Amino acid sequence: MANTTVKGALAIHGQNPQFLVETVIRNRIWESVYWKEHCFALTAESLIDKAIELRYIGGVYGNQHPTEFLSLLLKLLQIQPEKEILIEYLQADEFKYMRALAAMYIRMTFRAVEVYEILEPLMKDYRKLRYRDMAGYSLIFFDEFIYQLLSEERVCDIILPRLPKRQILEESGELGPRKSRLLEAMEGKSDHGGSDHSRSSSRSRTTDRSRSRTSDRSQSPSVYHSRSPSEAGSRSGSPSANRFVSRSPSRSPSPRNMSPDGMEL
Image (cartoon, rainbow, N blue to C red; front, side, top):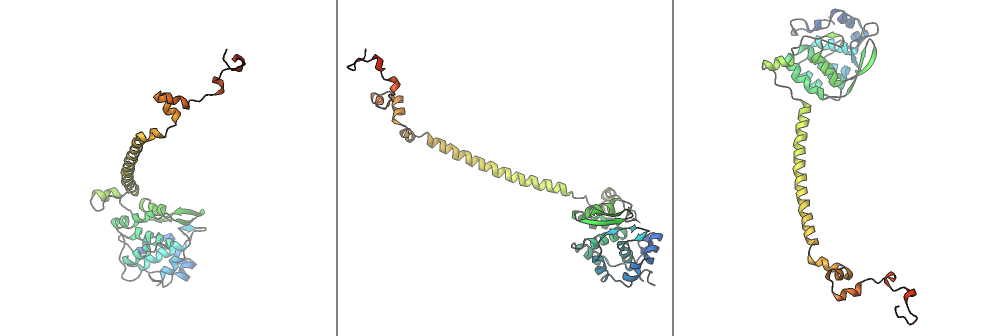
């Protein structure tokens, strides 16, 4: 039948993969027009075209109508594609809604260690996603959506399987410590800053040396010869220096103290 899980599918968390979606929502998906018209006989390859056409993510909206995102998610649970195919879905980063669909499926079906290892690198994606729910449309960032998958119990109106805390997996040795992007950026900045500081210090030393050389040259005797004769004369005190002394009219005898023959009275 069209609603049965593919033959040979493996049980996920001890049950039929489609049963990971609650019965009420699952029945609404099966009864929806989108499921009957667009999800019939889809394969892992043909599902790509439908995932590319997605324009929003979300759970149910309006009068409990399931979104196309939920319908394709249930279809993935029904056909159970191989792990390599899902990784290809994630690597097609130009199709962000297909990437979000694959991330949701991985969160619901993969082991806890694989979930952290595969989904945590996706938190570098900061693109916007359109989200639809009972309240209407809203915007959510891709890294925020991944954080919800790793930390919350219900996403897109679907109760997610229990996921152990990362700290527990680290203490048991199953998962390595998480690398902080902020710490890596700070370390890289400090290294770059240290090299810049060494370069600036070397440049400052070179500048100081050049300035000292310039000051030494400025103190050489050749510079004294470039001074004006009056300045040199006044410093030496020689008689010849009187020739360069400025005789301004204010220092000349006043005409009122002069005799008619030019003699000073």
